[in-house]
Image: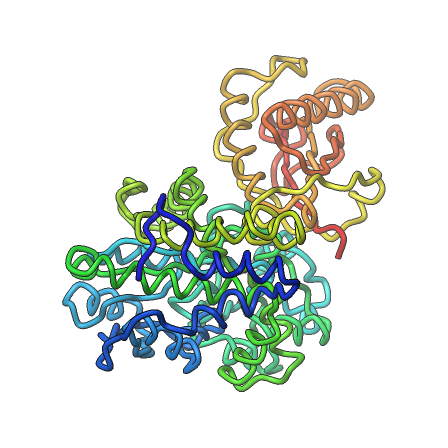
Length: 513
């Protein structure tokens, strides 16, 4: 029995009201105990959906026998198959040899199979990270330090798992950070993060940087490696999605709707009380309890309401455009696609309506649960705790953002020219991709050696302050510090009076670590 969006609350929630009045309210009981008692006879021969994915822990639910049992009560069963070749995964969806694929947003955009995004699974918030080999190269603490090593002529390698979020993070570094170029490294592409971690530990290798995921990120930190950037710092960079084939969308809307409704009902309960989910991830991934904790703490799973809001309010469109821009700039995609043609929210409408009914039932007695189910706490950028200038200056550098264009000022002035304003407006968009709780900004102004040191020091400080104010006017809410250096730090190999020394650096630093 289906309940379409806008219809009456399903019986599971009506019975939930009775449970509340009797003092027996329990989220798990309401979601499953009543739902597990079918109101009508269901076919003993459920239609099977074939899902292609991989061994990522965020996909553990799709491999769960208990979840499959829950689906069978709606007349559906699923078969999950590992297909590690992302291109083949997309091809099989197009050829109708698979009904659904689970994948990352960047891989979906890269291959663009004949199918649409119909659900959002999770975003990683620390499970993936860029790790520097500080034990081997003691001076290596930031991306800027990597540039200096390369400038010294040292042959360096970078290890990552190909066709995974690790590769996408490497591309983000290449596009977003000044002086970091993938072409400068011997790129060691491996099958998965455990191999990259082994290579990083090998003293006979010249691995300077590796992109890993948990539990190897925490192991690297414990052994003295520097975590220079993680998905906690850029919490919307890596997004996992459910993609349905065009055939499934066109021919069996009800089956797809029932599948998503059951999935989100399961995840709404599992994410609220994640003990069952942790056990599943531990068993599924053959992990210890502590390793499973690290994995699940680095992943934010979407509730149905949150997924629906991302689709309806255009948040997903913006993520598609931002992700596609990275792929275009790295040569992986010819152009940014029309985002709103790549997904549909109509198949999760029933799941959203179900959860909204539940929210109405619990918000008076359990407002914390009601807020959790909306998913609002996962998407709101928190207000940064104000830090002192000294705290920002002493924080671990990440690297300098690539400034695409010039930040120009009037001659001998701190007034930002029109071209500079356009550059800063784009920089503001890029800065807002980063977490205000873990990333702060140092705006560093430099001048050439023309005029007195005192004059240039004052001018560089005023220009840095003008940039900070402009960024704040563009809704940059991070801790941000203006620093003037005058002509004390000329570019290497550039004459001190050369105009190229008149520059503004946008340096990201990690805070609260």
